[in-house]
Image (cartoon, rainbow, N blue to C red; front, side):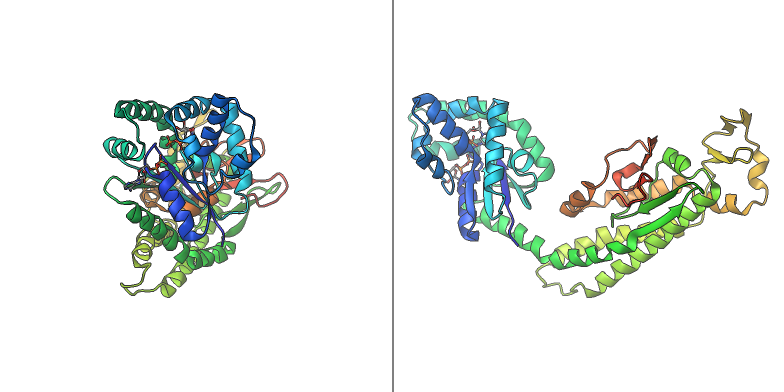
Length: 415
Ligand SMILES: Nc1ncnc2c1ncn2[C@@H]1O[C@H](COP(=O)(O)OP(=O)(O)O)[C@@H](O)[C@H]1O
Ligand SMILES: Nc1ccn([C@@H]2O[C@H](COP(=O)(O)OP(=O)(O)O)[C@@H](O)[C@H]2O)c(=O)n1
């Protein structure tokens, strides 16, 4: 399967040399986004005309002596502050790499240029190491100039690199030689590919997740729990708004329980086919999967099945058939009678037995386990609407945790 690799890093972290060698190892094409800035700087300084031949040579070029001098470097940094220039270069590289099979390096590749790259790597190294590398690399008579150059470029680049940290796999190269860094990157690629099959199995079980819930006689809400790392925390307010009727809340919890149960069984099925051999190349990752994803899924199932409740966190008003967070009903303008809860009302009891507070507590434990398969989570979460509000907005209901979304606009499954 073709893919792109984005490599970010501060100056002299090794982006260009590592990226180029990696591209050669994989038979990929190489693009140094910095060269595009240097190219513009060169023409800016020399006021010569655009040269298509030189431009074409920017691809698969790791070292263009024509563009490597310090004054070009400084001009490039200056030009890179211009948003219009950045956008232009980003668009150009996006276009060039559409067909995949590229290693692209720079300082905002994983965040701005190729946020869709299948592999995102951030190379880092301590300041002294980077300075030493650059001094060795450039035959500059006055190392002071290089020091100044790196410091000024670092100041501008740090925010970009901080963004990259959030989405990339960071490799600290201070104590690694180039060969070791490349090996590390290849390992990351290999590991991820060895999980392709498991992911496919996960994809196959997605169809277990569709549940239709009737909330009121007027609306059919289609609820799809697509995320296999489903977190059962449902925002209290959204819950109240979405399921004003007790019977529907109970039904929802029942559906959730069935969903978890189905998921749990599906995960166990996968577990059965995973290699158990300690020497297997993916053993470490499989172990991680067991303790995070599988564990999470079990926890999920446990939450829904666990009927031992603490105090109810919502109070039911029998007059208007609404739940309230306090013992006061807004619409009836009355205190909710304490005695009501103790009346033998089947539905109230079954609802109370699954309190939201217990769900929240468990799901927080569950959530801590996130982190593995970030790429998959990223893929799914892009389909969710980002909102923590849990309020009804127009016809949409946004659930907490970005994991559930319900919509009655055209009776379609949204996620
Ligand atoms: N891991 C490493 N160990 C030793 N030298 C390295 C390493 N990575 C890069 N270098 C050297 O450091 C210098 C700067 O690397 P370069 O790839 O130009 O960095 P960047 O593109 O991030 O500015 C080059 O001479 C390169 O060969
Ligand atoms: N993706 C990129 C690449 C380079 N640049 C700018 O272009 C200059 C030259 O690129 P380069 O790759 O040779 O620079 P370094 O990463 O070595 O600093 C950098 O110093 C940045 O100012 C950028 O802003 N964004």
